[in-house]
Image (cartoon, rainbow, N blue to C red):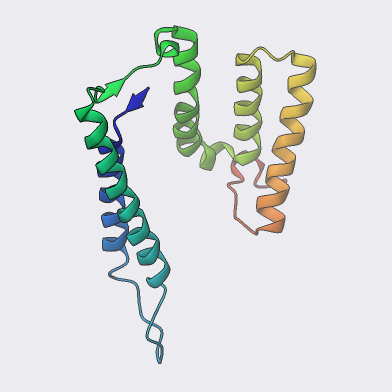
Length: 157
C-alpha cells in the first residue's frame, strides 16, 4: 500500500504536535534553562519540518495525478494479508496476556507460531524460538534491567 505523502506528512505533524503537548507538564531542572522536555521538543520540531516537506511532495504528486492511496498487488493475496496483520495482532495478544502468563511462555509461543506460520520446519523452529526467547529475556531482564512479566513462572524466576 502506498499513501500520498500529504497523508503521511499530516500524520507526522499531528503526532509531533502531540509529543510537544505531552512535554508541557515535564518538570524543569532547578538552576538550568532546560529540562527533560528539551530533546523531545527538538525532535518533534524536526519531525514537523519533515512533515511539511512530505506535504509539499504529496501536493506536487497529487497534481501529477497520483492517487491518495494505492494498494500493492500483495494486498489481494489472503495469506500475505493475514501474514501482514499477524504482527499487530500478536502485539495486542502479548499486551493482553503477558501479565497473567508471563514473558517467557508468551514470547516462546508467539515465536514458534510465527516460525510455523512462515513454514519453518518444527525441528528448526523449536530450538530457534527457545534460543531467541532466552536471549531476549536475558538482554532485557538482566542487561537492561527491564522488569518483564513473570506470570506463571513467578515462583521459578
